[in-house]
Image (tube, rainbow, N blue to C red; front, side, top):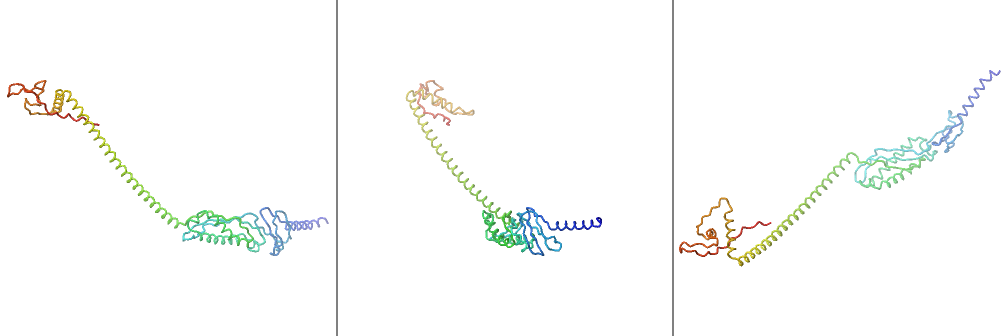
Length: 320
């Protein structure tokens, strides 16, 4: 009798365990759950814990749909946008969002995250094109990026609200020129730098010529002043020399004549091949014939007084 009841008991226990297992579901801290009965939302579970439902999910009586309850990131890469003026940029951006209303999220996209992100991406693309189209080439890379992200977020908030999603942040990761625009920009910048270099070289050459002209003028002035001073000093020296010679001549005319004659002898015979054709009784050699300079006249047969000879100029002394 007992052996006949045991299979029925085990079957009943298995059915009970199955019903209990089918009636229990767990929501963790990263999830929120929707309890659906025949496709309609019966309840929303936002807090983590253990919950119960009808155990007939196989018949679509009570079914649980889990939805993310954490910050999610959506990336949008290589968006080609045009700025005011016709230039193009390639932009990478991302959105941080969170599903705050799971019931509306279920009603809008049937709880499908891929469909929701597709709608957000479309609106993000349109928002980026709009805010970049209002800026010029340089403004798109300036400090206005913060206000641009704020404008894009404002555009996304409207679409996200209909999905039960809260946009937490919008960021632009990269803004680069397209390949063709990069080449054009590089060529323009290269031409500008070459023109600037030529201008700097021209200014440097002009400044160099100006300074060389000033230096040449100063050299001429310095040389002229030095020559003038040297002529003045030389003239003063010659005057002083003549004054000294005059005083010496006045003190002892005969010695002065002898000194000047000796200087004339030295100057005339300084060269190795010097040849003098003079009469032996010439006044030039009067001190060779007599130490007192008296020359004997051949016509009278008596000594004739020595006549003073013109003073011979002393050799010029080297000047510094």
